[in-house]
Length: 273
Image (cartoon, rainbow, N blue to C red; front, top):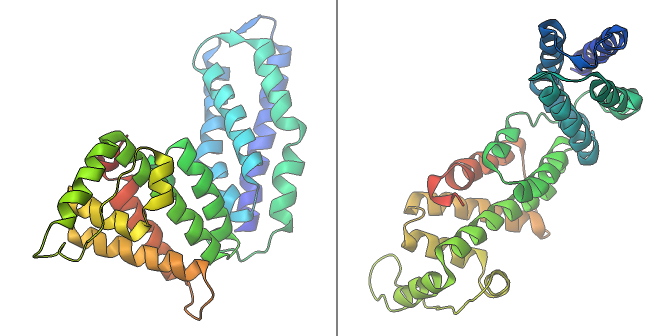
């Protein structure tokens, strides 16, 4: 696994150097030729599809991953239209300057057997940039075997999305739903005896517990009873992870946790904002 990762990075580094040589030999101010544009896109595609996903697994820091993501994005954008040769060369120099130190060293120092989180990374597909701050840290913890820390951070991202949806739908509507629930005397919601008056995200975060949020979401029709039950299990794992106890968090627990958050929260059309 480590050898394969290093081979992918070696190939990208060598091709970046080849591209730089070709561009230095060109006489035109702009890169017009389709061959160089296609070669650039090929390098970038290899980076985004094959190199970038493995960096988290080997403990490459979030800052480094973001830095190279942005640089390869810039390089890709240059390749889709005639662009200045000097701009190409500048970004190539920036990428190659610390490429070996930033990429090869962490991978070579890492253990051969690091928990695979490639399948967990799918949760990032519909996450916002703010949520990715939590989730990238969460996946980084998972990749190093810190499952409890991963679950706490992953749940933070889910609650962030829930809070933002409530803000979008309106705090007055949220308050109204809790008043309605408090007055119910029969059926599934009869034990919900709280009402809230929140006017901001700060109010919501300070006064409403996560388990109470799940009940309001179900009553509101944003989740059904089965989804509520599954999210309650995720919340239980979060609470178990945040407090001392004997209940272990396994890879299977982790996979189930992220699968449920992805399906019920991040990919749910009702939770788009």
